[in-house]
Image (tube, rainbow, N blue to C red; front, side, top):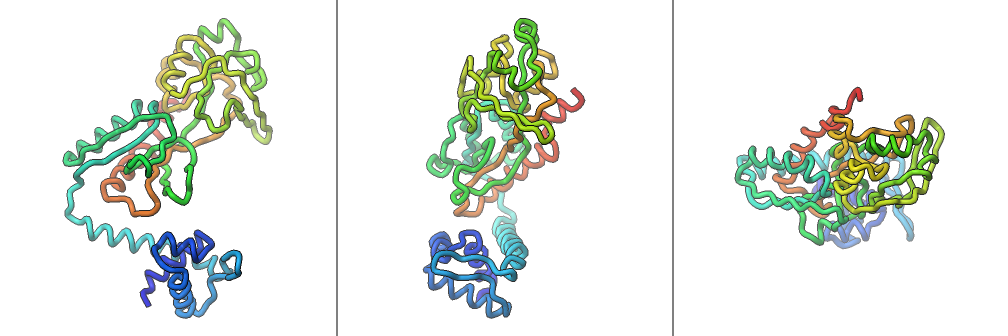
Length: 306
């Protein structure tokens, strides 16, 4: 028995809760998947899975075995990749997609620094606020704010927290006043990012208290830079990200409001197809971005103490 292969198959069955689906993803028949799992159970002298006609679930032994098994499989794959890529220089095209605001404000410089380290690479950075399917459009790596649209098709690695902030220009606040509670926003001009998954419902929390305000958008755009400029012109209160607002907040051209209330925390994530292991150049770029943006991203460090 190839124990590593059997462990890999068991992990996939546990994730998919289905022999058939695991087989489809691994390119095996259901019977072959079942055979490998049975051989693994026989070797361990423990039953790992409950089988029924409708679903597959983990036994207590399977639950205890899954995490260390998955870690061992991942470590073995990583070791094989390290051997395969030893001595290889990173080279060739590298297609990256990112939101316009983050791509222009931060990612472009990060990719440029990465390219200086690996001059044989030819990065192509596509910035677009549309939620493009990275597999359909052929991107090696997609940077996205928020969750994964298809957890089965895409793998994710978190890069940094993506904090939200409400802010407006001093001129706007002088003319219209400063909101003291979330519901005060009903009396204000609100600048809305049309790709927010919650729509015009803005969610707030303060300890155990939760508030949701459905704002009447006075100005809407599908691009964060557009909203940033509109807010600086005094058009209204913008639902912003700190990676875009940080400099204006430092300089005072935008002022944070409702700072006693928290907005939902999102994340910047690196996405790549789950159906194949990331190439050395994709892994290297992700590692580079993690090193630049963690444990605290530079835009949040710049705002510390404000």
